[in-house]
Image (cartoon, rainbow, N blue to C red; front, top):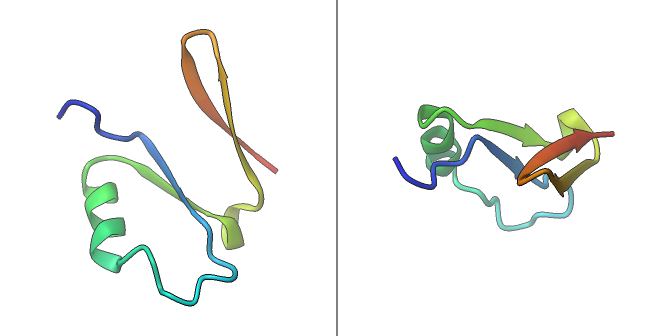
Length: 58
């Protein structure tokens, strides 16, 4: 699948809307993405360089 994410992040605190929907998270995981959560994984930073992106955890 072109453009399939390998990593996805979701902010948990201060989200009164309940996004993303559980079906969205399930679809990301089913597609092979690692889903990171700020309440479990801490602060996250997306770092670019060398022709790609990486995720740095706090």
